[in-house]
Amino acid sequence: MYNAKSYAAASATSGLASQTIARRDPTENDVQIEILFCGVCHSDLHQVRNEWSDVMPTIYPCVPGHEIVGRVTSVGSGVTKFKAGDLAAVGCMVDSDRTCPNCQAGEEQFCPNFALTYNFPDKFKTSPVTYGGYSESIVVDENFVLRVPENLDLAGTAPLLCAGITTYSPMRHWGVTKGKKVGVVGLGGLGHMGVKFAHALGAEVVVFTTSPGKKEDALRLGADEVVISKNSDEMQKHVGSFDFILDAVSANHDINAYLQLLRRDGNLTLVGAPDKPLEVAAFNLIMGRRSLSGSPIGGIKETQEMLDFCSEHNITADVEVIPIQKINEAYERLLKSDVKYRFSIDMASLKDE
Ligand code: NAP
Ligand code: ZN
Image (cartoon, rainbow, N blue to C red; front, side, top):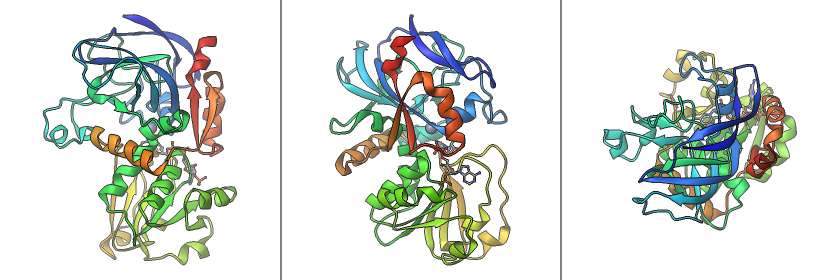
C-alpha cells in the first residue's frame, strides 16, 4: 500500500478537503496511473451530498471523480496493453465479473457484480470503498483502463470518460444518424457532449435549454436550432417531430413536455438522474407508441470506440480548468448551471497540498 494525496468529503454537508488515502500497490494485472486531469460530473455532486441515498448511499470519506486521464507510472507483471509512460484513462467502472452475459456482450455497465470507480466496496480491502479520481494517482485492472488518443487535449478528454460515453452510447443504441431529428435537453456537461455527438453523427440537432444565455454556444457546438424550453409557443412548433430525445437534466423537471415532441415510435432516453421520481402521463406514451428509457454510461469496448471516434472527429469537452482548491466553489456553480461546459481539475494543483 502507498499513500496518495486526494480530496475527500467527510460527510454530506462538509464539502471537500485535502485528505491522504491508501491505494494498493499494483498487482499482476494492474496499471498505476498518475492522474493529470479529472472531470467534475454532476454525479460527483449528487454522491458527495448523498442525494442518491435510496439507490446508492454514500460511504464517507468519499473521494469522487470518474473522468480520469493520466500517465502510466507502473504496471503489474501480467499487463500487456500498457507500459510506463503511456497515456491512459479510467471512467466510471473499475471491475466486473467478466463472466455474466452482460460482460460477455461487452456491456459491463449492466454486470450485477461490477465495481464503480468510487463509493463501491473495495474487493482488495485497501479501503472500505473505492476512491475516485480527485487524487494524484489510481490503480486499476488493465481491462478497465482505456487508451487515450494522442491528438486530443487532455483536460478536454477527461470528461469523455463519463459525459462522453453516457451520451454516445444511447445515441448509437437508438440509431442516431443522418436524416434523424434529435433533441438534447439540458446544455450541461452531458448535454453539450450529446450535441457534439449528434452533430458528428449527421443528425439534425435541436437543443432545449432553460438558459437563454447558452443559445449562441449551442449553435457553435453543433445545434441546428435552440429552443428556450420555458417558451411554450416555441415548444409547440416541434410537437410530434423527434426521432430521439436525450434528456440530460440533473434536477426535477416535466418530461411530458418532451414526450409530446416525439414522433411515432420515437424514444426519449433519460441519462440525467434527478433524485426524485418523475411523473409520466400515460397518454404521452400510448399516443404514438412512444417509448421512455434510460441509459447508464457504456461498456469498456464502446468507451474505447467513443474515444477513437473523438480522435477521428477531433471532439473533446469544452472545459474550464480549475485547481482542486476551487472544487467546492465549482460545485456551487454547477448547481447554477454556471459552467461552460465541464470543470476539469488540473491535478498538478494537488502538489500544493
Ligand atoms: P450539469 O453539467 O449540471 O448539467 C445539467 C443541466 O441540466 C444544466 O446545465 C441545465 O441545462 C439543466 N438543468 C439544471 N437544473 C435544471 C432544472 N431545474 N430544470 C431544467 N433544467 C435544468 O450536469 P451533468 O454532469 O451534465 O449531469 C447531468 C445529469 O446526468 C446528472 O443528474 C448526473 O448525475 C447524470 N449522469 C448520469 C449518467 C448516466 O450514466 N446515466 C452519467 C453521468 C451523469 P440548461 O442550462 O441548458 O437548462
Ligand atoms: Zn459522471
